[in-house]
Length: 281
Image 1 (tube, rainbow, N blue to C red):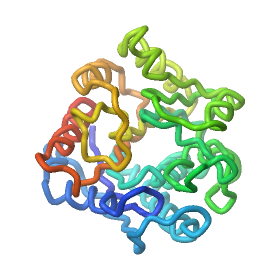
Image 2: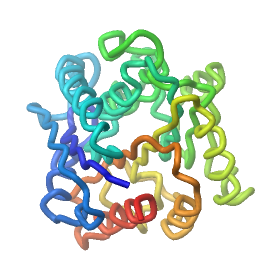
Image 3: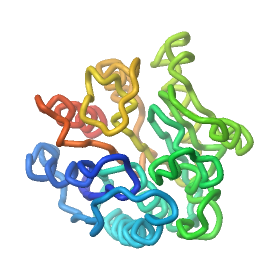
Image 4: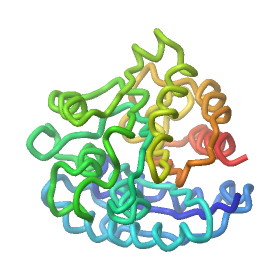
């Protein structure tokens, strides 16, 4: 299977400027090339300083449009693998992969957070807390890059959740998005939950994508993220669960929120590589 690496140096929607350098540093490490990935280029945000809604919207819209066009173009060469800065880059990734909503796409979103705020519910106004709502067709109109949702809610799953605010779960429940909290995962087992989630997203008519926020993992495995949450997923268990899945209908992989300024012992960089290995070998 041919793969194409696309780097998304985003930080404007996040909590720390260091996120913008994550894709660039990982590109320099050459770890991503061990699978013979083709180079799909870099989308670089001009503004490094995080800006909340609404100040950050114009720059985020511009960079998401550039990323969407790149993903749409590069997917003809192979499976897109997007290494992102803050998770707001997902707006560009999945808008492009879905051809701006023309394809009926599923999405498995592995994250400590629901990322389903709109400006009306977000306490902080941070844009990296809004991308899933935007992809589902809700929230800031200027960030809706197509007509209607970019991913279909009935084929969308969030897994690994342990931190959210009022408004987010209610929105996902209303739309019909399934989400698995860490309490449910501990009770039922990660393998069982991943298998259920995989069946749901892979039933989408035009295939599905996988978006992994590194903060979904326990900080023991991925400390270099901008918003750490304790008691997260085990890396060995997640690698095993992902590696055992049938990836025939997987259309793209996105891994985000690596902040190299916090990666004192390269632990998070190694975790990123382990996740790629589990999905691409």
